[in-house]
Image (cartoon, rainbow, N blue to C red):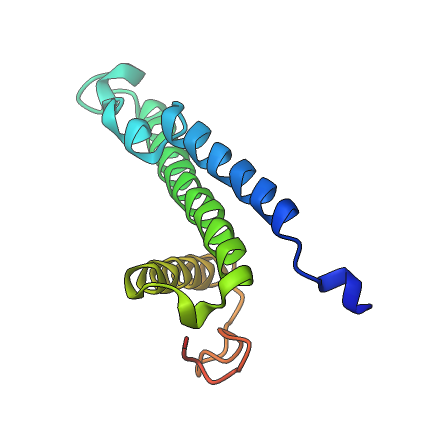
Length: 145
């Protein structure tokens, strides 16, 4: 890889950050926002056969809840991803060390939520993850600076 391929360009980074900010705004103002997805839950009786009289409706309702939960989690992870990209763009200019402590904490929290979601997905899919947490950071020491 050439040095030009990773050279910082403030104009393109600013445009990229503006695009990321726009995507975050679009996501949070749409029906895909995780808060909006949870705000109008569908009850079991909407699937017919109240009082569990129709067993298949219970299965459909359980599937609906599972999918809704997964979509809500995905929405949150996408929002975290976009926000993390925006922070990374700023950090590419000034460096992580120059960022405010609250922004550093926000990035660390995004990392932790993402890592937890990956671990959960791996466990549910029957994949195993390293017990020591190796690979969480570029330094491989399991900590964020």
